[in-house]
Amino acid sequence: MTRPPLSPTPRSTLNREKQRAVYDRSELDAVLDGGLICHLGVVLDGAPVVLPTGYGRDGDTLYLHGSSGARSLRGADQVCVTVTLVDGVVYARSVFNHSMNYRSAVVHGQVRRVEEPAEKLHGLRVLTEHLSPGSWDHARQPSKRELAATAVLALDLTESSVKMRSGAPGDDEEDVTANLAWAGVLPIVTTWGAPVPASDLPIPAHVTNR
Amino acid sequence: MTRPPLSPTPRSTLNREKQRAVYDRSELDAVLDGGLICHLGVVLDGAPVVLPTGYGRDGDTLYLHGSSGARSLRGADQVCVTVTLVDGVVYARSVFNHSMNYRSAVVHGQVRRVEEPAEKLHGLRVLTEHLSPGSWDHARQPSKRELAATAVLALDLTESSVKMRSGAPGDDEEDVTANLAWAGVLPIVTTWGAPVPASDLPIPAHVTNR
Figure 1 (cartoon, rainbow over the protein chains, first blue to last red):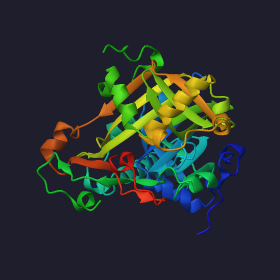
Figure 2 (figure 1 turned 135 degrees about the vertical axis):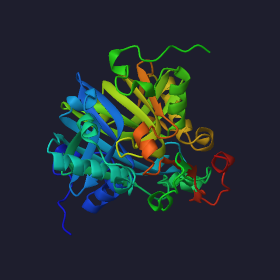
Figure 3 (figure 1 turned 180 degrees about the vertical axis):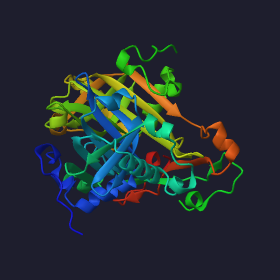
């Protein structure tokens, strides 16, 4: 499947540590689909505000949601959405070369408030299925009142960039030769714990199999 | 120890979901000390930019760093730094009441570029010891050239807010009575994997004991 290339604008073209830039569209999808929350940046009264929030991807569209009255969403035309997966701490032979292994996606753009009822419901389904796959069909779907209380925003993925680092430390040759300090990677492993039921119904497969 | 209360300004006073706000200063420290990376928000050309980066806390000061030439740091007067710890997915009986268990800290303020050599070295030590406790003394410390290539920024923690959610789903009474869908929490567990050495030296205690 051919997808458009990333980084068509100056601000989504990486200037720092270019060797960590990835321009494969499928990598963007992988980072976005692999994360659970994003950090949404907006400008309020001229100052940046960054808040954690849920999201979901459908093709080239990222859906966000929040309370209809949330100040951070009301004035949010231009946004930046960042998803970061942290894979490990990189211990180098020098403090300077210490680093992290990570994959991050940064999406710039103007959000569109989704008002059309069918797309709004679709966006909420995408968001729900990202947070908790299987919940849309299992749980009670939104009432009219709940839909009205929820704002759904859509963001096009065209103006995005992906950055990642993996593997061993990048030490200076002199530090490797000196061999005075240990070097390696301490992986960070994120797993699901055992479900904590708040219901006497059997735990459904979409939860136990996650 | 008496610490100043949080949220002295309108923008660090939470307006949404006030029941999730926490005004205990020690909670701010706990979230910041418990995270590994932050999301740094700045305004560039009028638009928000959010990037993942390392940080470290010393008392009431948060230290950030980056390349001396990084565009996102050069013009960054007003910043917003957000640290989020994700603890679990909250499965409710309705889609609307699905949620996450999390702890997040949001710090607003004007960064100060640290130029004084002793404080710059101190800030780098704080940053290093946050990322990899024990590395400052174990690994080679920064050379003059490396120090010059690194920008260290300091941010006061006064204008901060903390938000958290924990525990069981908050379902509507009718949905509990109907008992048509399972509800509970799926915890997210983050652990350290086995170290991956890039050196034939023995793995030091500050890595194995982490």
